[in-house]
Image (cartoon, rainbow, N blue to C red; front, side, top):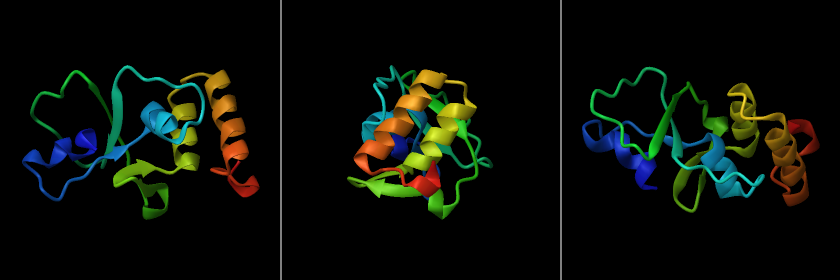
Amino acid sequence: MEATLWPQVRRPHTWAVLSHESALALYELSDASPSKVHITLPATVRIRREVPRHLTLHRATLEARDVKIVEGIRVTTPERTIRDVHANHIGGAMVRQAILDGRRTGHLTAEQE
C-alpha cells in the first residue's frame, strides 16, 4: 500500500498501481519473490524527487479494466500483470508458471489466456 501512495506526496491525485513481479507475488501466481516493489505510474507522470531504493517504477497508460483493488491496494489485473512480465522479458518459465497458477486458482479464464 505504501508504495502505491508514494507518488501522492506532492501530487494528491496521482496514483500508482502495484504491478509486474510484485503483483504476481500478491496473486500468488508463480514463485516470484521480488527484491523491490514494482509499481506502475501513468505514462505522463514525471517524478523529480529521488525514487526510494526499494521501488522499481514502470510507466504505462492503464485502462480501468487493467486495474483492480485487492485488500485496498490498486493492482494490475492478473491478465495485465502476466502481459507486463512477459513484455519485460522476465523469463518464459515464470510466465508459464503464472499462467498455469492463474488457471488453477481461477485468476485467469480461458478467454484471457
